[in-house]
Image (tube, rainbow, N blue to C red; front, side):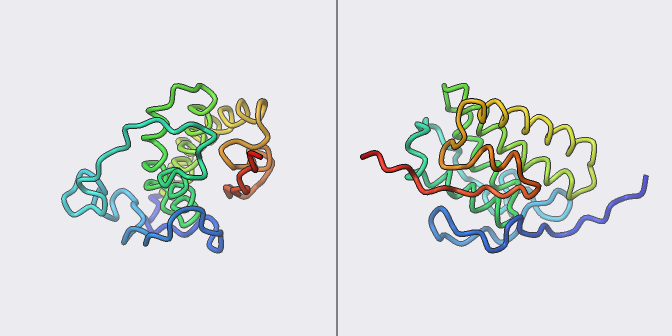
Amino acid sequence: MAAVAVRELEPVWPDAPRCGPADPFPPYRFVNGLHPHPVRDPDGHSYGRVERADHLPADAFAEDQDYLRGIDLYHAGYLWEAHEAWEGIWKESPDPVQRDFLQGLIQLAASLLKLHVGEEKGAQRLARAARERLTRVAARHRQYMGLEVVALLESDAPRLALSAPADPT
């Protein structure tokens, strides 16, 4: 098996509309072996960051900066960083549908990162797991936490199109 040259990540959806705050992105997209680990290395771009420790109700997604930032990070090719943005929400959720949804997004991002570094088997395993989780969500919700889950599953492009929140009135 030939070694894959590690290179910088590219955006998943370069012209995606921003969903969250217009905060600047980190100075690099983490790729193991190319950059300092973001949280473990003192030179990492997120060193010292405290992980989220509260629950996000699924219907409050439009106001949640971590969730929306995760979508923006994902589209901009910050796959590891998107995973981190969603992981704290996932860990705190008591809702099995929300847990499947968030873990599906995390696994989707992780699968793309594995594919990028040439770990094809790991990428395929994570992509299958993501699809299984998101399929379970789609069986109950065409749209969940603002994302068109069914459209994502039917698409060849792994873009997370955020729909406008439903008007509660």
